[in-house]
Amino acid sequence: MSLVCEVSKGGKHEMVLSEDELSKEAHQSLFRFEDEHYLLCNGDAFEGLTRALKSGAIKVHLSGSWRWILGFATGTRELKRGDVFYLLKSCGVTEEELRPFREADVEDLFHFLYYGKRFEVLRKVCHRAKNRTEQMLNRQGVSIHCHIVSSLTSQIVASSL
Image (cartoon, rainbow, N blue to C red; front, side, top):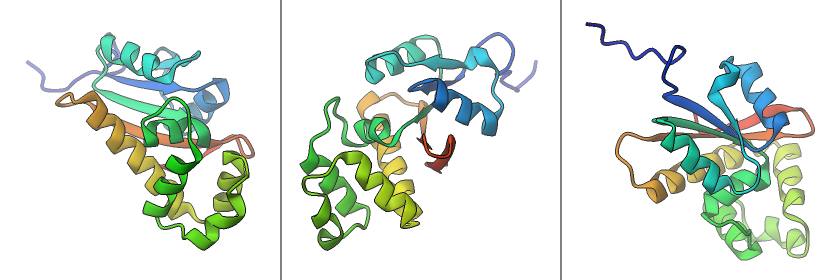
């Protein structure tokens, strides 16, 4: 009897829910999972997560854009500026830093953090998304990992790992 859980053969205990093909490729280039471990999310991300868990996954990687991961971090399907600002303040961004973005698109906040080398804030957002999603699932033994993929570099730029 073996105590090793064979992930690559048969059961898919570790799955990756990717927002799109770019996110899948960015994750796959770093983690080298086989294609069968990826689910592309076409539409509702929360429904995709439910599908991954129903397939038997106990560890799920969420790989997607800034906006997509913010949805998990705030726990909402529709992002509200107030929720995003509250989240970023709790991750170390000051009111003064957020002031120029009151009327801006949420993507502009990503560019501000990325080009400003505020990777600690991006990592904290990933951790908030991980924690919020695990709490929302309320399932013992299920682990979530979040990865923000930049369309500028086609790479993962922040992670909860």
